[in-house]
Length: 327
Image 1 (cartoon, rainbow, N blue to C red):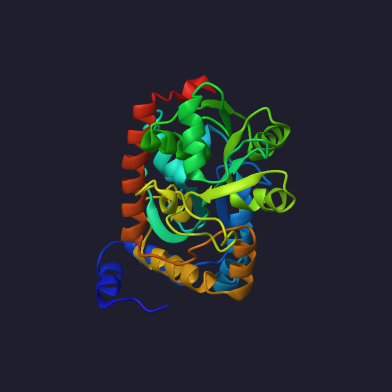
Image 2: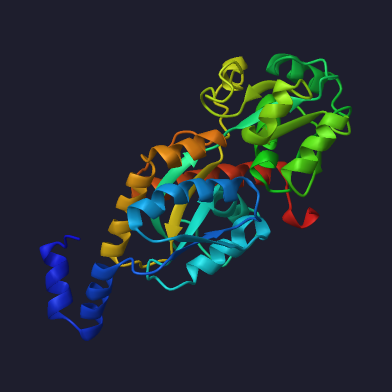
């Protein structure tokens, strides 16, 4: 690893601690790296972490070990990482929920834009707007018409209060002047099951688990929530395309580390993510589960994304009067 003249002088001319930190950075990584995930096994975040680990292990030459800390919409995991040693052996698969939604809904012990070392943007995973096949809506204009004509007749499912699915639907309601009753579930599987069964009529769902249901006709896809069409559903137009100008609700994933990570270690990790996100096996695994826009971004861009989305989703939750303790 190459060090700048400034870094070498700082390490040699200061204290024994500074010198030892430089030595550790040169040897990094010398042991497995722990990736903390804020959700349980088997979910979207777990799948993203495992796909990303394929390329990351090749780039770093060390195993990537998953550690699951589910709860509070990702805030438990984020808190643990914010307090972890800044040695490069703990990283966090951050997402929209733990970084840009939950901090606007409840008090958390971390500042998502200040209490982490940003490493890399990973990608996004847009949502798809689904309706039960019995609902007489084949596109967004007809859905808006239904919701305006019978505001008390329709309900929508989500994977929980404060989830990206919940907030994406609330943003849609606010931008279209419509209403529907929110029925929160503890996970996407049960939310989709009741959509198929007709207990709810609408769901803004993660794309990957919905694909087989769409293909089999068990649910109908009428739009995607991202700013552009999804490669997984190229025939399905965006909400914005269908008349709701400016609508965009695209959950994303990024990787951050504890605060004050030594610059040489941060640079080593950032370079590893650039390599990992161009690895064909890693990219194939991520695209298979519906992750798009796979592209490393600068640390500053990751921080800006966290800040802008926190502002956006806090505004949505306050307008909707959402309270997390309802769950």
